[in-house]
Each structure stands twice: as C-alpha cells, then as structure tokens.
Image (cartoon, rainbow, N blue to C red; front, side, top):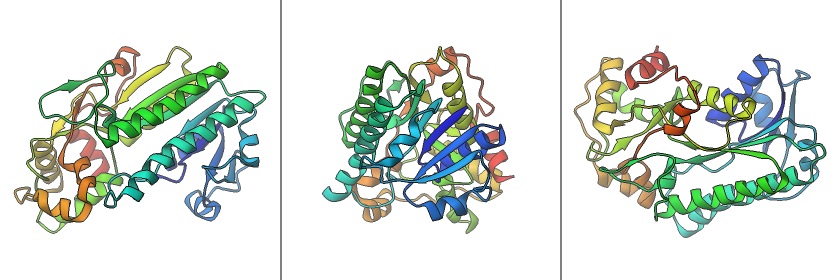
Length: 306
C-alpha cells in the first residue's frame, strides 16, 4: 500500500510508520517539522518513506501528495492534558482537529486517483465521563468540552464519504506504551511515591499501542470495516486497579494518592482527562473479528516495562 499519515511523529504515529515501513508499504509522512521527522525516522532516506512538510490548517501543494495513495491515516491533534484550558487553548485544541481534518478531506476530494479509505482518530471523550455508565459504539455523545471536540472532529471526517471514500473512525482510549500517559505516571513510582490519581474510582479505558497500530492496519486493509470502532481493550479498569497493578509490575508501593487539587492546580479544567473517566467497551471492534494481543492490564504493563 501507499499510505499518508498525519501526526506521524507522535506517540502512536511514529510506531505506525515504523510498522508500515517494516512491512514494505510506502509511507508519506505529513509533518509540520521536517527536521523532527528526519530525526524520528533514521531510515528517512528509504525510497519507501517520503517526508513532506505541511501546514495542516492551510491548503497547499502538500495536498497533491494524497493522489495515488491507497489510504490516509489522520492522527493529528494537539495534546489534550498538557496545559490549562484557557479559552485560547480550548480553541487551539478544537482547531488542531477540526481544520486539519477539513484540509485533509479537501485533499482527498481533489485527489486523482482517490484513496480508498480514511482512518480518522477520535477519542472516547466523545461519550463524556461517568463512574456508573458503560459505553459502546452505539452510545450517545456527552455534553462537555471534549465531547464537543470529538463530535466536531468526527463530523469533519464524515464529509469524506461524499467523495465515495470509506471512513473508519477509531475512538481512542488511553494508549499505553513506553512514553505517553504511562510515561508521566512512572516517575512517582520510581521515587516510591506512586498511587491512585484522584479518587481512584474513575474508569481507565486503555489500549496497548501495538494493538492500536494493528487495529489501524486492519482498518486500512479490510473493506468491510467501516464506521465507528472503539480503540480500547475489552477489559477497562478503575484507576486504583491500574496503579496497584503498575506498582506490582514495577515492584514499587502504590499507596500514596495524587490528590485531585494538585492536578487541578496544574491543569485547571484539563485535569478532567485524568480525574474523570469512562468505562468503554469495544463491541464493534470485537464483532469485526479483531484479536487483541493484550486483553488485560497486567500483561500489557509487563510487556511495556520489561
């Protein structure tokens, strides 16, 4: 295949590009920072890997690169839980998904020949948060800011269907690998100061990064896969169980909680991503026949942490 990838230097995108490249596919890396991409991919001189600098919020010559691609994977979007949600920050979080997707769909509409599929990221924030409700792909959208972002993001991606292109939307849970959210949780455990974040009762719906990459590849190659799929493992856990298991795997105590007010002081409204959660089940994903390599949290953490 020939596949264009946005967000290619990110936590998920970099692993996806490595996997595509290793399997002999041609990859077009669409990146805001070509130098960063060249550093991220030491094999950037490989003829099957093309790095294209682009401004994701503007039309441009980069859009011509979509012509002749078999598939497009859109993983672009600013990190959600790294800064306080000022009005400006919230607008930036929205635009980095909405406008980027608009421009990508525009490129697909004008492509000749067109790709056959767009695999577009979304997030389980679509459902809102709850400690008591279980969500699957048929559940209604929530009504908070993240739910609004996800709905807008998915609505823009859905316009690609007007061009006759198959659309797969993957609502990502918390992606576990060396780095990302897990990387931020490791430091207090290494210092023997780990423990549950907030109440510990909030749900932690997760997926191993390698399973997510396999799911993306399945979405690219299986014509019968269309619509919305939750990219979460079949067995979500409460935050308290997550941190207890992490402590066991690291052979560290896990009794010192991180109080809610500490995160709220740092992140403001952005702390909701960590302090609130949702129990999300991948019913459509399982029904489609996807086989997870990591079904439960402990084997996933053991593989990641060695």
